Image 1 (cartoon, helix red, strand yellow):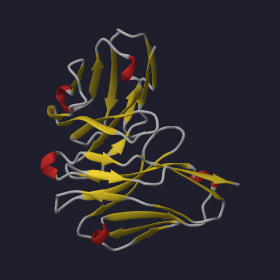
Image 2 (tube, helix red, strand yellow; image 1 turned 60 degrees about the horizontal axis):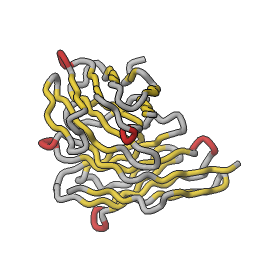
Image 3 (tube, rainbow over the protein chains, first blue to last red; image 1 turned 180 degrees about the horizontal axis):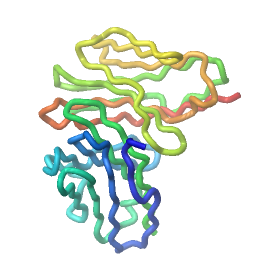
Image 4 (cartoon, chains in turn cyan, blue; image 1 turned 180 degrees about the vertical axis):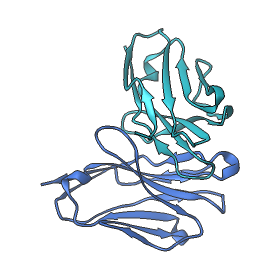
Length: 112
Length: 116
């Protein structure tokens, strides 16, 4: 399968724990995006990379969130000291510049 | 700031009926892209169509058709002869300019329920 993949698909954690999600983009795509979707809402932009450079972070991305894309391939999104308000679907998308973004299946995070 | 509004939160139809989903957008960019994505119960966003701001031709793909009207800032989506498999949440989205990273702004989504 050559689409965008995300791991894990589901994560349940206790408040205060750290979690890390991984996204593997379509191989020739140099842009990678992270979005967050809460129940009943549309996805909201969090951050994006062009190759290995993180070019923008949304105000939604508090200091507890960090994202990396080493070597411009896969990306990780880490949330430290999780809070119940972090419970959401975290979506990753990839594209070439100015082209359509293709989404992965998402990681559903539940913080107890 | 960009904004996408999908006024219909949920639409319920009987199979074979047509259904039209409304999308209204706001942007100051002169060049932009509009999208429709489908999100079935499995959760993955599936790309349906992309339209750039200079192309106002309507498009038809099988049972799907799209009506882009720049004068009213609308990009509506019609499913003809709906089927149960069309049941999903549909999102309209607007892409910012390339210089802003082509970030997507999504509407709130319209849930379509097609009953047999």
